[in-house]
Length: 347
Image (cartoon, rainbow, N blue to C red; front, side, top):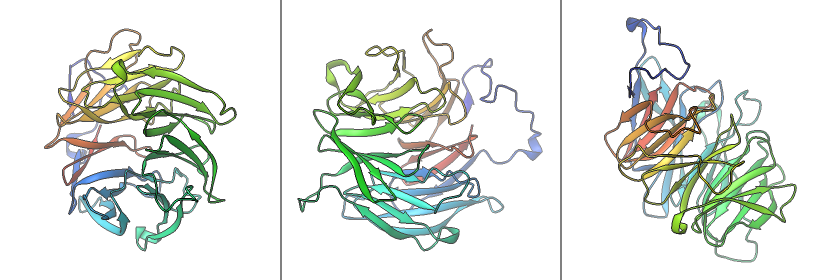
């Protein structure tokens, strides 16, 4: 990461005092046998530098690999892999830092699937396929999902059939399914806690829901000319803030749910469309964005309500960045995916 201006402080707000000789590598790269799309950092504190990667092959037969950094050798090793029907639209590890629950992965595509991950991440097997369309042979593809951090028994999925479904993992059944948008729903994200979630979709709106009162939803934002909204990220350290991206658009919109309809900031540092963003898991005012201009940028939004003009850190990759993850268990590390490569970067 290049510092954008000499006055920019590092994320922990103090200068790096590490001796250069002791400084570990800042970047590690893994090359997959296929274009990478789905990607997830494991949150378990006992599984450092473990990621799940999903293929993007325009075919029924796709793959998911679990890779882990061998810190002594300085390279990633494939620990396990499994076949997946269609490219996974999203992959997530169970949110379980303390490693008190079974080691599970979830994926979406045609259905929501949960996978048991065996010891040393080998022997990965399907635990359950969850399908709420009992009456139809055909499924409405799932575009995304979110795993609730406060209660990992809850997963919410979004679908092109305009609905969101909230699942009870232990009972392996849907708690509720609701029509969330007028068109396809592209992403869903929980706020802090178990009740509030938001979704975005092809109708250009961000809508907020509360599981305690599903008769009502709140439209927090509508994009200019109702441009579809593709992604949504909720700031877990300060749940007043959400980030969203517009289709084929070079900026990221930051929303404050206390001020509906007007963005509090627009982050305009990319020269081409943004594909992914992630809030820092350990800081309420840092967000990372990445896109087709091959850049990953880190922004500090603490000056709000003043305009946020420039990122504080910038990293240029070798290709258009499709996916981005910020590790919750190792917050010094961000992962990006471009072409067949996944890189982890020390921030």
